[in-house]
Length: 387
Ligand SMILES: C[S@@+](CC[C@H](N)C(=O)[O-])C[C@H]1O[C@@H](n2cnc3c(N)ncnc32)[C@H](O)[C@@H]1O
Image 1: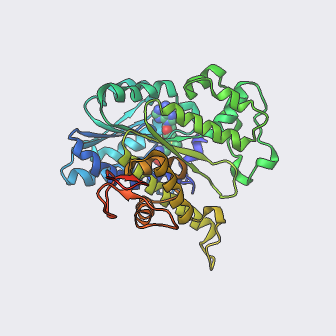
Image 2 (image 1 turned 90 degrees about the horizontal axis):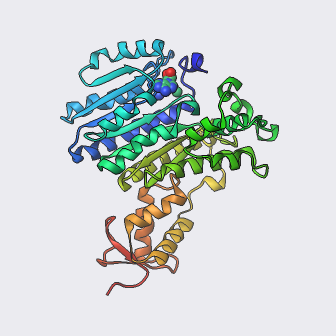
Image 3 (image 1 turned 120 degrees about the vertical axis):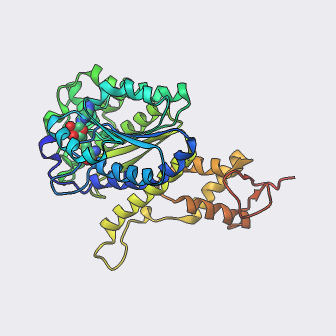
């Protein structure tokens, strides 16, 4: 894979760029108030540019850094790449930015303890985009995550986790059949070279997963391949939950009808603001995908009904949360509902649904502590009138 990866950017790779690019602007605007220098780290930077001329993640990040520095923000970049040929390109490309972009030819796993040290004095955004799961040792990444608990610094992570590759790698490591059954195959989905999933021991898989929970899943003959992939994605995100109270993932598919995604973008944060921003950005990414699959070049949007928004169902779901947890702030209603509806509704939809409930919606009514219908996230809500 490595020799051809940077020839041209694949359509599904563009989703991670979109999400990274759109997230960085509001992210920097928020964290600058933490009054610490900001460091954006690209752990698997690549050459910076694809052969077809498309920008790689280092150029996307640099654009944001330059713009922010022009606005007086103390922000730098650290780009790590282990392969010499890609590193040379990266180094040349970053030459004009050498005052604020550091580049190192190194394996990022050997650099993690240094990064953990930097997290003591910096606000850190970590972007981890390896080819596959082999380069993603959870236990080593956890050193940085641990730093969060110790120093109270802000460290967010956005990573590309190839959960389908993980399932196949896990099966091979247990000397089991890793071929996906024909009924689960969807054209070009099965393009992972066999060499990329070979050569791992179960112990090495434990290190990548951060535990041995994966074994029960991959050997479960009652689960289809797609179900195993989903379960592994869920359990991996749960491991990250030990360090990040809020962890979400976005499955990036090449085609809608594919049963398993190409990869999952996993995002971890400690801040509700981060998750609300990411929800809206991943909502937009998902909309783009649905439009390209079901609307582009067609007279009507032909998306399946389960992909349509249903504000009535959504509003009733929010009402249930409020009646169960009352009194509860609007922020916690949003956070609770996002577990179920992540990237399916925008934060504006949450506000609209709650506003409708405050006015009365299909026989349901809630009340705000202030008695107002125009409220902010800190406002307490209940199905009973406040005294
Ligand atoms: C998927 S590509 C990254 C693409 C890049 N994020 C972009 O959008 O332009 C993975 C890159 O990470 C590098 N890499 C893989 N494992 C690494 C490691 N442990 N440390 C540093 N670089 C690594 C590979 O050589 C490759 O250039």
